[in-house]
Length: 382
Ligand code: FES
Ligand SMILES: [Fe+2]
Image (cartoon, rainbow, N blue to C red):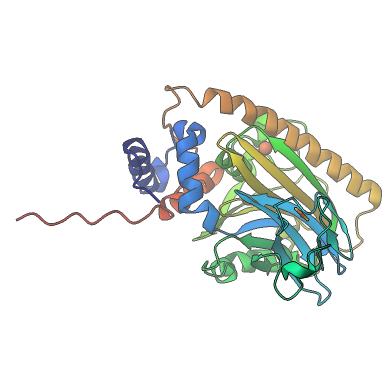
């Protein structure tokens, strides 16, 4: 990539400074980090297109031929379970003239291109190309390119960079936090897709801080997870987390796994696998969002809701889905308004709230700073 412009260099200097502040003096990023299209492009080129992004859950596609589609930057993706039981992330672009092969989700024996009817099997191998025999196009010579894919705790992650280092070893500490909840075995219930007019970092920061809970969600979340009871939890190179504790007055929300301690049943653990996954793990409910950044001020959000075993009835699950939809709308309204305001030259850096409430945002900023290319060496003088 070209050398960054003076304005991007100034911003990366700012990020470096903010990321090294002591925890009790942590600061927000200025508005430009969320609104400058050139900075977004810089983020895509320097790390977003080389990182692991959560696309969904493995049990969304339990049988061979089950698939759903996604998008990461320039790449249209097809997430499919093959006849061998493997989950693969394939290019969703026909090898003939580039038509999108599949849309939405479903189950199929073959992916047949809607343009000239080339067809591909469930591993991405071309199986037929009408009238192309004498051109030498056939199954042996043509297949859909495959992207790196990793499954961790039942989540499917993709990476566009063939040389990316594996994700799981970077999440070992988080694994220990989630182990008692049996995250891996949580049962998929439903998925949802939405487009929000906000910068991708705004949603990560919003989801991962508890400071707004009692203000933005007075009726929906405050009775269960008030700001005042939240506590920052473990963080690492590739993740951060906090505990949203329930007050004594709140009824229990199901038992979940028998490996859980009493206090683990009485809180939701919110975590982010950087850069774009945010999730809430409670005893009987797991809600995970994969953020697909589309532009500096636009994201596609794909979220899944999973539950533990059969403890919750369908009515209870429907009520939880309705609650999450309400909460998401409350957040979305705030973030879409903030996106308008962040273009102001007066949207400068300000103080973050104490660690238990916004310390996770400082963790995120430190992660962002670690993604910056190494500073060019300055030659010694004299
Ligand atoms: S573009 Fe798919 S068959 Fe022509
Ligand atoms: Fe919120």
